[in-house]
Image (cartoon, rainbow, N blue to C red; front, side, top):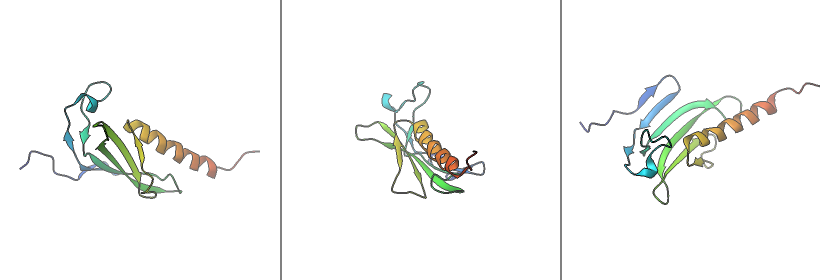
Length: 113
């Protein structure tokens, strides 16, 4: 036994923790409120509305180490694997996802005259 949680870990119906990652005890890896450290190598998948078509797709969310040792958050949609969303914050990645999902939805809505 390694003491690490056995993965994958299913969270509800749409989210799975694939890899828990490992703690990096450096100031750059602490969250802005200083409550916890981001786990390097964390990876999860979730089903969410697609950014490219009606319906859903699978997104992969990862925490990686950046060029200068900082955490980098990456969200990749299975519909566009060559166009990952990368940010210094997981929230900013998901803001980008939501903006594109909402653009797609508003383009599909009938216009009222």
